[in-house]
Length: 474
Image (cartoon, rainbow, N blue to C red):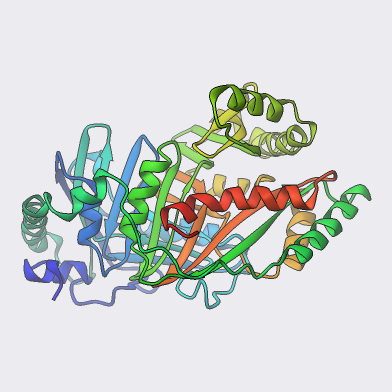
């Protein structure tokens, strides 16, 4: 029996007796009811821990933290129209919904998309769809010093919301009381400091050996010298089997502590089948007509002291290869957003410095011509040359033909959508997908005409380090 069942909340955590994977497309007449109340002092780590054994989601970007568990509804889509299909389902879900409580605590969908629209789930990504979103039954939202706890339920068409609302309010109060009662135990420990996991006794297996990597880069640079492509991003995968089931909560705590300037995310649609990471790259954020994105391409390691660190940063800023790679991303974003925007501000390129790596970084903001919601912008920008290449069709064709292992959701959009269909999506890099004790790590490098295979191999090794460190993989 789960903790929720012990306190009488099992019916709400399991869809009130309905299947956990209640799909909006299969249940178009169901009505969303969402209730919220303030919950100051409740930590996201403790909240997420209570959802262990259920579907769970998490997002923390330094400004906003979202966490959720249980499944009130799921949205799925496939193929070239997956962005439009998810938008249609999201509108349908939020239409005629009853939302009681603070607007800031409104229900949020969380999920993402596969990198390619022809993605077919394989062994590694067996429970992930080409487009997959979850509306959690229980949601925690933290913004600055304010916190809200939300309960979401999808009611059958023949059920009167007025008769159900008292039970929902009681269930929400009961959950908050239970969370506060147990807040001082494992949740605070998870949030307090990095925890140690059992190191893996086995080495990482790389399905793509260096000679094949070098040949793949050689093929790409030859096409670039012939004028067929300007850039392509190529990815590597590392496979490992740990001595025990991956402790996702501890991994998230470690990522949050080690990489506070990144967006930490988790999408766990089934227990122990999780995609998580700490990405420095925002794909796009939309609120009304305000849009925010960034160009992030070109990287170098951090220095051992401040003097070496500054010298490395200046080397990166002055490197023709890195500047060319970065400018392709800036130009592509401008080309795609300009027709949709009244204004677009692109400042001078600078550095984004993380604990282990520094990137060329250009923040981009603008005002859209009209309110479009987040998903049309996600479709417009994905993939940017930072993760796909330029021109996009040629780069995607090369990736499809050359990479021996599917990317799944790696380097793809992951994020959240609110009832106004605004939201934020990050690019899912510095990430891993897990199945109990099995882990697949992903990293990529931008290839241009003068790229050298060994340097790009070393760059991907550096990008593997966030997940290796938090899982203590040697």
